[in-house]
Amino acid sequence: MTKPPAKAVLRRPEPATLRNLGDTLRQESWGAALLLAGAIAALVWANSPWAESYRALSQTRFGPRWGHLDLTMAEWAEDGLLTVFFFTVGLELKREMVTGQLRRLATAIVPAVAAVGGMAAPALVYLALNIGRPGGAVEGWAIPVATDIAFAVAVLSAFGRSLPSALRAFLLTLAVADDLLGIVVIAVFYSSGIDVAWLAGAICATAAYWALARLRRPPAVVLFLVVAVSWYCMHRSGVHATIAGVLAGFATPALPVKRPRPTEREPRAERFEHLWRPVSAGLAVPVFALFAAGVEVSPSALAAAAADPTAQGVVAGLVLGKPVGIFVTTFALVALTRATLDPAVRWGDLFALSTVGGIGFTVSLLIGRLAFPAASPHEAAIKAGVLFGSLGAAVIGAALLTWRGSWRRRHPSLQHAAEGAVDEADIDLSSAD
Image (cartoon, rainbow, N blue to C red):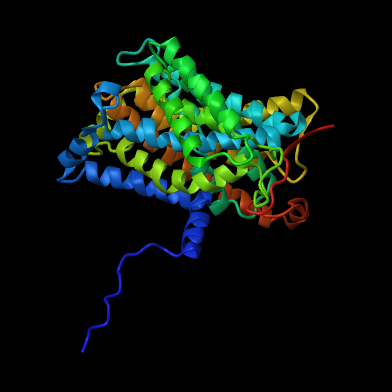
């Protein structure tokens, strides 16, 4: 009697399963959960009896030396995998500028200007705590200027469900503008020894991608190879390699191309974002967090970080500078111009939302690594500052959003003005008379 064939324990998932997995990873809450899981794993591993294996893995090198690609695992996560994250950021920016919130000045002006204030204020707070102080380091001024959109939206969705949906639109637009400004900061202030020839090669490769992406049937393999060439040239140029991902995202058409394929029902920027966001949220960002967030949290290490002006500047910038910058800039713009808030939004709601903007994490950790390399005495303090500053902003933001929701429930007359909960359709927060 013959035995029945053994069933495979692990096999390729069914198409429906893959679609469901992709849809799950596209949700901000799941992206934030995986990012948090990567950070927690890094903290536990770096403070366990196997901490040496964590450091050894982070410093393990692979890649060809002849191409300056013999990078450590941590560097591959930062320069390589994180390029996927910045590619999706570039796609989102392109789509918002062409067809979304940033397309019309009346819609974008308030959150865009708030993003500028939300970057200037934490930078000034950081500098105030570091200039002229023993142990201070001004090169970390940009670390607290970023907002992590996945974490921020997850906190808003979890604790601000009864608040107006206009707040979500405001936060998304602010974060998009914040991402754009953060990319400029990385490209301008954290690039060194720029090689013009390699930079020109990256630009030419991006131009080739721009042309190919507008063909009726652009070959996916060729598109990928051209972006890889752009990434390599950018890596050799001295500009941070992830900028290649941003440029590719910007070069992707956000409007339907001429004579599209019959099955192509959406612009390519939207389709590419739909395809790559699960890779970004499910792989690139959590792995980067795994290698970037490993910091010792022993009492002595925390005491040393608390005494370091750089960590103090990061925490104060995220927890204090970010919300003050966003709120004060928005208030001044509304008071001094014809811009207005959505009728459903109260200033208390906006201040609660502003505190959520202090969740920096992903981009803050990246800028921290660029400003203070592994050999820097400030490296551990900066990581601790980003982690605890972002955690503090999240806790304060959650508490204030909960308070505002409770306040609204005690004033039911305001509920008719709130055109839906924050996790429903987006509504513009700002408009011009």
